[in-house]
Length: 400
Image 1: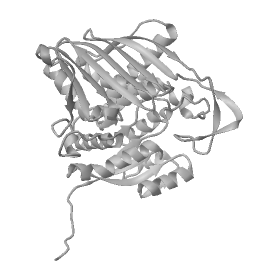
Image 2 (image 1 turned 135 degrees about the vertical axis):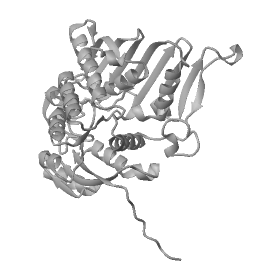
Image 3 (image 1 turned 120 degrees about the vertical axis):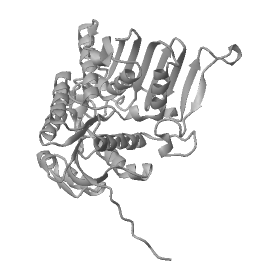
Image 4 (image 1 turned 90 degrees about the vertical axis):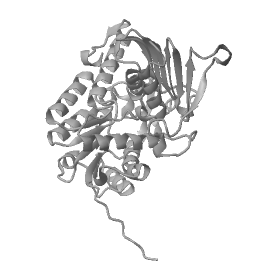
């Protein structure tokens, strides 16, 4: 038999990854896997350059993830003529500066959440991108879940009737040990809020795509572990602690819980916690309407639970929908139903949406506008918790 070369006419798109940690790995996996998962892609990602502030992190990150070059100056990466997309996976306080520089350089920008440290900053980022005509995306990867795609379809079809309530949780115990070291995530000027921005932002994004814009909030936040030891070595996930060093004061929330009213009159509740003892990792949403209800738990990613008021009396109750090829992007991974897919696979779905939006010159689902609107809610919750009162969230007429 004769071996045949494979040639491709798929154009390349140059990627600059700003950051080398866990999310750099997740995003790169998404770029690498998108063509294998979907069979085709409008662009073949080329891993042009990776930037990190430390030489050892930049070099090892580029080598392990397969980037052609590395630098300790993100500005070099952002202005590199071989770069079309700037992918920002840095600590939160750097998002705005890097994104604004990338937008000014005419690059498309993919940024992790929360988009910025404040809604005002996020709005500036969104408006700059709109003026420059570049595409943007925020890493709300749970929007890509086939279960959420089906939930959006059912709600939009009217199957649940008038939506009455939304409840969401994103809680984990990753920081419940008081000797988990102090990193940038516990420092307000670097991270902004704590559990609220890190975890709650994801649930806020789900709430707003499923139910609609949030119009007012009232909440409470708590910092249960007041101090933490200095880290040793790398300062990201999995850092070690220097238990002999002085402890630093934690500056943001371990737990935030808030109630809300949507612009359409529905009500809801969201809880975010990084100290939820016994909850290694738990994310769930529930939507209740006049004609039915939906429940979804991320750990049971292969099922969506549906209740319909109109079911016969002897058949009433929640029914499990086994997610399969007919739901969202599930079929790109498996030809039959019921197989769990993971969070990194949601990133692959997100990257597919991102590349297609660029190629089709359209607004991506979950762009900087969504990042700004989520930031508006984050700001309002922090004010509400600090002042123990209801706070209105600006609602755009176009979103009603």
